[in-house]
Image (tube, each protein chain N blue to C red):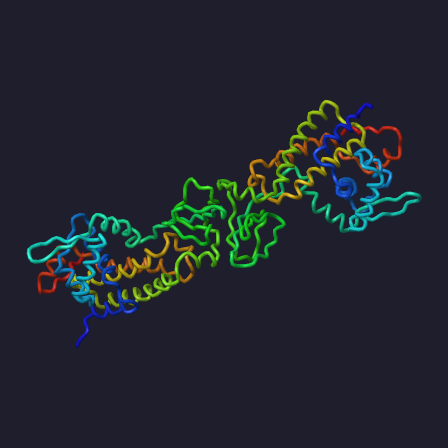
Length: 269
Length: 269
């Protein structure tokens, strides 16, 4: 049986780790239906899952979980259902989107924050990482604090024992794997571009999902303070480049493609 | 019995704490005989001690200790002895002098040095203070280190919990006492200046001794990072002002004064 170009790419993008279905569907909703009122038909979801190799039963279980957890809601529409993000689910996607889709890193500066070791800490750490119980690196300076605060300048070396505590090893390793995968994919797509809107969308979802699992686990800090083996900066660059060759498809185009047996081709833009 | 102006000043300068004789003699040698080959006669030392209220026996014990500890050496000279600093004793005085006599603080900058908490520290701390076992503030950046190093800029607030660890409370309290004493003395000397070279010298020695016991116990760091109650900067200013009204007397002038029963007056300069 001949393998299609899409099947080869899907295999490449899932070989290191099969994505969890419910988590991948969150990525799909964030990618396709983040606008207020956006709905994805059950038929379109099924086709996307099928192209990724997810069985219908696994998709149904995942949709059930996402509904139960408050991510999505479904609407009956004749004999089928449409699915959309809830207000809360949408707010989660909107919050994460700049970190996932931005061409440039979100964090522009690093504050070195050392708190009194004899006091209990109450600082918000959403934009940084604790290196020790009283040393925080963050891109957003805490206010009203009695901590020692200093901006890490361009001439200041951040030693390896600090860098190594900012991000877990798995995330660092994944950034390296994704950079390699993206680099190979970039070459491949130049030789044989994907033209079918569903194919394009499937690859976008898988790419965004891989990157999302890295970037949302890493602290919001400039790339310079990460360990030397961090490839986040390269991933961001390659993601932007590869996604620009896989333009985002409108929901209507996708629904038409899902409803029709004929192949639909991506409009040049 | 009438009290002389010198006796009043000596009482003021020793009321908070009677100086240890051997330590005061180190100050005297540093003040009077720091040049290579300088010698102080036993007679001059006795008169200085007498004016301060130190008994001859206490002086003899202190001189014995200083000889034993390698600070000074004595030379017989007819029926009396002369005393001078040893090479080591002189090197100690030469090293301490800039900190004691400088009009301006020695330290111009503060480095914030955070070392890896999991490693044993080997940094030299002569120019700074450890705030925690892995946080050092120093005016002299360590080299070849894997510590996190940053210069504390003018806009950076050093919080009280760091300031409070830089210098012991006694030293801080002494700086406050000395500033008050100096301030009162400044006024007093304007009204009734000291004219006798021995009187001038005795007051200089007592002042330098008080200040030496503060400044050599404090870390070599800019005044800005000390606790708010530190009066080192004011002490330095007042010391400079008061000492300039009590000009340093040459050893020959002092030896003549000690050898002669007539009062010798300070030359105007």
